[in-house]
Image 1 (cartoon, rainbow, N blue to C red):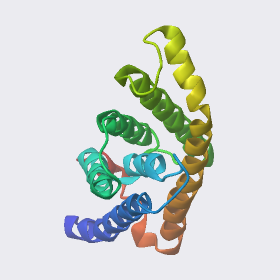
Image 2: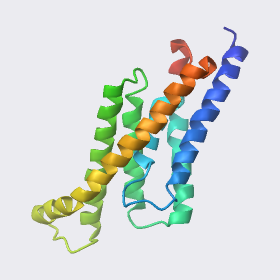
Image 3: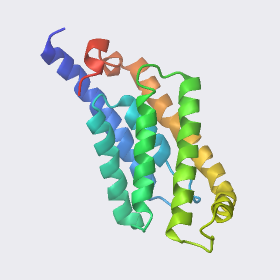
Image 4: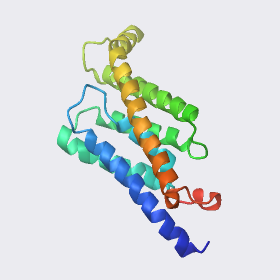
Length: 187
């Protein structure tokens, strides 16, 4: 296949992936239960599907920042963004093989790391009345457990929509399928 043919094939795929990421980011500003947002699934999806690692990080990061312009920035935003980048990296693990089991494992790993990072940030920053001791940190994690349930549920729901939607689109429109393996690793 000539390079121009490959480029034509990749543009609709990249546009669809970017559109799905932007739509997921837009859903974040719609009222929802606490921690029931598409961010974790969006990060995994970006890492798994954008062929460029740079794009996999930048497009959803810009979408996340744009959403924060509406929802508001807070003092934990850098921690949240760092956790988001960890989820993109977990998505990189899905690039070679996207099975239901691997997507499920990545979804759970992403939700757990988000819980660990953001609850540590709450404790570390002094939000709440948690003592700066291991007992205080443990208390912060225990109080955050209900939010972990919401995060897991949201990530599972939105991962099913994003990954399932892409799989259906690839099945229906063969031109959207992944590029040849020789092209897949290029940035």
